[in-house]
Picture 1 (cartoon, rainbow over the protein chains, first blue to last red):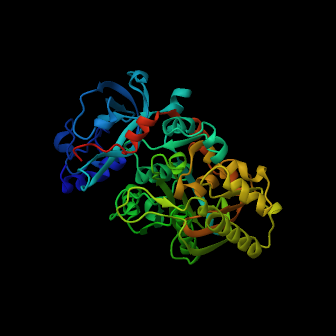
Picture 2 (cartoon, chains in turn orange, brown):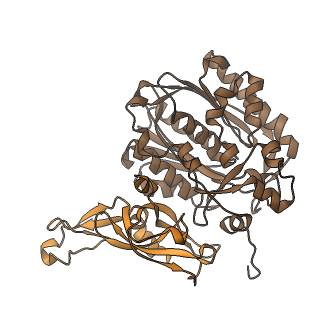
Picture 3 (tube, rainbow over the protein chains, first blue to last red):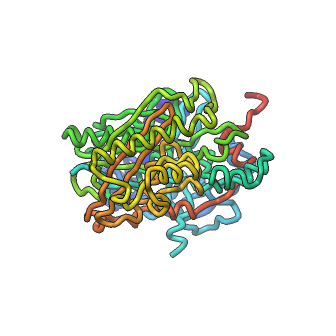
Length: 138
Length: 348
């Protein structure tokens, strides 16, 4: 990812900041400027909204053929996480073995290195998810 | 009253057992447990570094007590493993926590940069320059494979918000002692640090820790028996017990804040995390002595009194240090090398 694009998106990536439509209260992540449900009624009214970082695994896959830069993490788990506020987002699940993961597993967001532009380039940080052991213990 | 308003730690979930490192290098199986008193150490995952640890530790602190970013007037981050040689970890924290008006910088002083950050922030609050300040000690420290540091150099960190309102632990006094002592160093561009072996003991660790501790007790008018807990820098499991004994402290005062046997030496995170483990169990009125040590060399000492405010404080909103220690996943040496990016590939 080029540096300016990463810089533009950093707030959303660091703190899961999306938007909320004040008309129908739907939350979006990544942020949207217009609510697809409310159309022009939402124009100029969308509010920033920070997700809590809590959610559950909606679906997942275990990747053995890595993308560039993920060789040292394979096999790694990529999931669609359904956040407690509604939006579903794609993220890596870490600090857990693939055989322990299941659909519906409670997870929470953590701050991790996502990728790096070679050895000399920028390090891109953002969200990944780990099992929410506190929720699992209850 | 200036002191700790909230605190939080983060220890990566992965561990390597000392016996696995001994197996790899052909050391005597009982060497790490007996010689260093280290049973296991924390290992950062492949996608963790000093910055991610700092963010997680600060998030844990803010879970216990929320301080809005605009009220955080200073951010100082102590580490010897900042992810960038040039580009601050402190600015990343400012962005994550929305503290855009903070005085911010990174610090390095081997293992004492975290307590140096605490002293700076404490001074700024005391001077009335800022309302709250964030001080973090964080590291993913490096140890040359096969060296004694391979058993100890680990990862973790702790964040303190210091202020003068709703203080849970008052900082009564703080002093420092520093000399030019070459016991441990890493030159620019070098991957691993070098050290003076036994020279790291008497003229370095013991001299600085003992001098700072005595200076502090003389300033505070206290003696060892006045403290409920004492936290010393912990490069291994042995030194803190030995320095404590020489100063006149008991095992019971030292052990609650002694974490190295289970997680290794978290460098800039070590004394702050030991103190964090003590705050996890402290009661109003408890008095704590904390003395860090950074090679090169210096010590920062703190005389701290826990206040009644800790009873109202939401300690349970974030995991305790002990809980994070118990939540461990063990890896073998090869995985450790992979996570620590220590495998040199042919096409590099």
